[in-house]
Length: 598
Image 1 (spheres, rainbow, N blue to C red):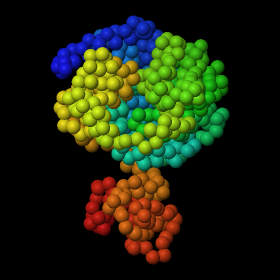
Image 2: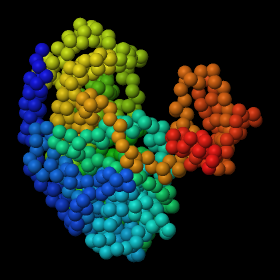
Image 3: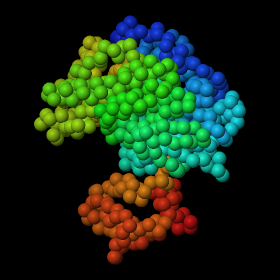
Image 4: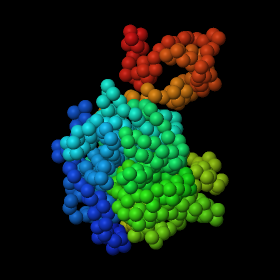
């Protein structure tokens, strides 16, 4: 068995060769995107970064200054190029009367000159970053009030900073797509801790920003670490072709709900010849299924919504902007960009189903799906965020579910049980590590990771296996073109080496948004905490009066169910409480004794 150091040297050399091959295969010297990303720059990001209310950094792009150097062997050169593009931040003029604040957070904030003030589109993830962006706008362009806010879709990196740009005494009208309130709070609420845990992996929240750590998040750097807020929209748009005049500016909307988000729209600004595609389009392939966890998106609908926007608006636009990354300039470029974005999702959809109908399983489809030739020239459809293999499995899941049709997968063994059986069949832990070592020498990293993962899941206390698995994950990450897939590999490696490190509180919970949950959503989310072993034999009924709304909660048959607008004739207890107190109690922020004193 080769030593750890010798295996590390083998992988260092192999990774360097793999990444050098990428540099030879792609036109990385093309500067077109850099020209577009730098065009119209008026002001820099705050030099000192942005602090949050916890006294920690909410955002600091200077941490990515290492990207100014040449690409190291530990980063895929294509990802390095994208990371450098996403590091171009500041205030940019898009058109006479339209600007974007880019690089202040994961997303962009767009600023439109209205008759009386600023119309802001997507006020970022956190209160601190959006306030900093608006300060730069006012310092550079002259101070004006915020006269309207547009929320393009239901993901928090586009609305969590809203209180940072509003006058609390005179909030302006807020526009959002129809269905926004149904999904903004509830989309991830049932996912709970599991979604949050996977988000730590996806966004690399425990990684250092470095050539051996996090370098990029595909559609931006990472998420801001500040106070997340929410204000309920006052106006909703639900039809393609709908027109609104907002502070003297005409908007023409097209609906895109069910594509990148469950409620979303795009819009044209005819006066400025600017088309905003929200997050339906970006400068990368997006996720049909996000690794952090959500419902699978509709790739076919996605392609059709892009085509609809192209048909309706492309002939009227000189600039195309998105909620992430940089603009597309020029009508011909816009038409080609939209066609290629459309065809990316249509290709993913059609070829996944073609292979499935030929008998391929999801893993086989992910392996067999070829990258179209035109993707090597069109950087904006490459897998810096979503990837072909991951998205193909997502399309399969949407149509067929998780079962691949193989009877052995009807009732698969749990990872620990499977690991024990496989390790035993290989002759024990040392033999399994030997197999993994040979796989590393042959550069079969996925096989090496599979074997070593079984050793770890089987519960064997083998530091050698853990260290080797971390080494393999690191090199899988170093070769990744996708920034978030790199983050996932490197976070896995870090946890194998250092254990799971709790993150300090950084304003991640959006109290404003939680307060908008319906009682049905709230009690459904609470019910997933019921432990069936502890509740065995329990029969209980509690009636709640929550701010004059009646809820009857029954625990029976190891299941909790809440009937809304209902009361039981003889409950075991009756509770009168506010939703805010209920929230504080269940999240451990307040004791029952404290609540009684409220």
